Image (cartoon, rainbow, N blue to C red):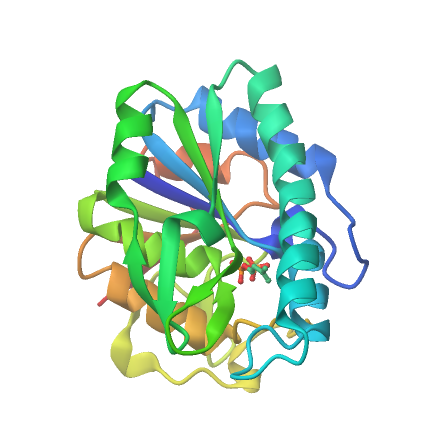
Length: 250
Ligand code: IPE
């Protein structure tokens, strides 16, 4: 089983609310389809659909002021985004089924507590492709919290051979240099490590949090970060061909 996460940074323009990058998404789905991978879970992030509302309603804080409205509105935003991708997959004959993070996870104090493996496994065995996504979910302590696509990747990594993160950068940089392999001792990353740090709204934490999560995943499955802006790289990494990317080794 392969886990593929399409980051919000590649699917949307983070500084323009609800801007879905149709052509990029379509190409990435084609690259997956044209690869030799047939058993996979596709996960996507929130980008400019999920993050603005999550921030507005303080859903990543311990006490959001109006949680019910926030949960409802941000879930709607995420389902709108998810529908774009779902339709594209069906148009290409990929029988995807939506698995909202808010329905397959429970959190505890902002950390993933439980993920519904059985649901994912049973849909897989029917020959469908689970399409999971970052969402607003239930938290045992806080009531509600944000479940990121990265949390879903970690939660499912137990039974995955490989995890591929598709982003808008060539890989992970340290001291301005792209790293073919990234190990724990290279943390923390600082602004000067990155070549072209862009300002992004991101309620689920910056690059360090993402990389730490990838290091955890890599203890169970081979883990890569690849640039989805460049045509063909996702297809190549899925087919285990030589390609510019970073392998994260925990
Ligand atoms: C965020 O998911 C989901 C919401 C904000 C509701 P991610 O944290 O995985 O999204 P990206 O990939 O960083 O945009």
